[in-house]
Image (cartoon, rainbow, N blue to C red; front, side, top):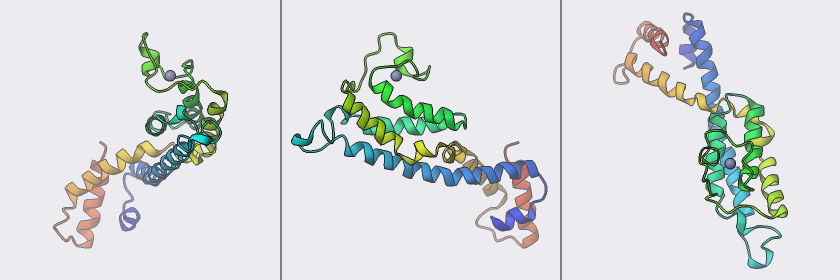
Length: 192
Ligand SMILES: [Zn+2]
């Protein structure tokens, strides 16, 4: 890939996109780890011994680990690369589970369906609300949303890879000139 970048001087605009998408690729790996960390933090406050229920964890959070993870992935892909928007979407997780849907996305079921009934346990306890709030706010994705907003670009990395495969058949060993030529063709062809 380095060789390819060095020798491809034409189609500069597309190269910029490629460099950006490569960054996006890294960010999306981080997103996976970031979501995993949030899942772990929410799991920690969603189960425990009967004795410590309501103190360190709450039954009201037991059904929210997976949907929160899904929401974070969705939020990153729908924030239009705006870190403030991503942060607000993460803030709204707690509101949504407290049955306050004022700031929920217009496409959410809670907004669209006039007969909406929460499918998860509604948080009714101030202390539980705080537990979830602090789990979300102490996550890296909440603290550094700008590092994750490019994640949706992974699509372009995949589509570019497909185009390169058309011009550079992996079963054929090309000479240097052919390799450069074919790389250039792939860049020009990609995304037209
Ligand atoms: Zn909602």
